[in-house]
Length: 429
Ligand SMILES: [Zn+2]
Image (cartoon, rainbow, N blue to C red; front, side, top):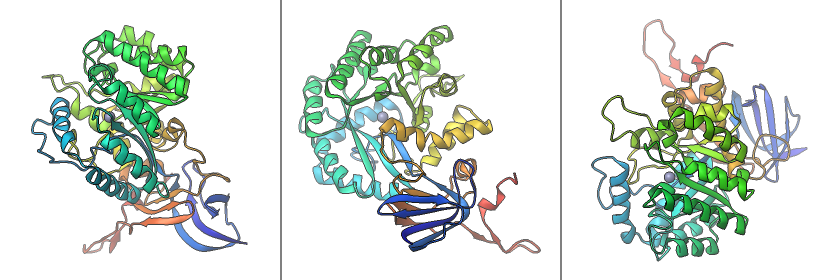
């Protein structure tokens, strides 16, 4: 029997070792030790980790790679970032948004990141970014799943045309309903926006993902309304609260009441550690809050928590590189959560968990799943997080679409080895 592709001698994220993965017609058709068959393409994993692709559940592709346009964010704060984005928006062109997004997707593919949920700002009456990213979604579909969220950056009620624009964007084919309740003028308006947006999602049978309580204000409690509305409308796991940073600063007694509501509602949570720890706590002197949501406590109640990137080289964040292992690594440090179990979880939070939140079909390493995989220069998921390991091969539907040479160093030290592979330092278990 001849396959399109076989990956030989893989370590799988679930701990199995020495596994071959065979693909035909874009799907995994065998996954077992020593699959006896020929293949058009053979990828030797050589005892390294082979994982399903990385997924970024929270991103802004309309703003990415715009760093410096029309000027730099001098303070590095969220509010200057929002103001700067307001300056840039009227200057955007259809072609420039597409070009930046495509260039970003190249980088994403190189990093094994093959699915992205991107918010797209609908508070520009031209809907220029919406139309551009719908075009990008189609262009990249052969190699990257792009899911778009209609995001009223300037506030669903606060911006006079946002409500109409959001509906126009959904009519154009944007996938998910977005919002930003903490940016409305009052708590009451914020809560009303959550209700209105959840009702739109329920009516249209869509998912909803709100920027929710991205604030240090412990009284920013819109996640409570989101959970309540998701339950009332039967949205469950179709609803997601992104950021949830105010939960970091909330009163513990209140949180003890809030968390069971979140768990019962079935909503998902997405933390964005790179951005949360740099943009939150900025009004503090010392002690200075980290602003990361309560990941461990939500996990303990069975809430699906994913980790997103949010920004790469845009008005809010001048760093980043489409590396979801960088995101997992930062979460481990910032939470902090350094148990072996929690570090291992951080890998799932940028792979399997967001796959479920985005509702991706055919994701995973099993017979019948899409033949989408990443070969990493690491022995296992914890090692991948530790090393932010190079992606040696990225496979989409059974075709290798990116290759990176392994990182090795040649040493010239008396009596010491001539070459060094950082992955060789894995603990012997
Ligand atoms: Zn965001």
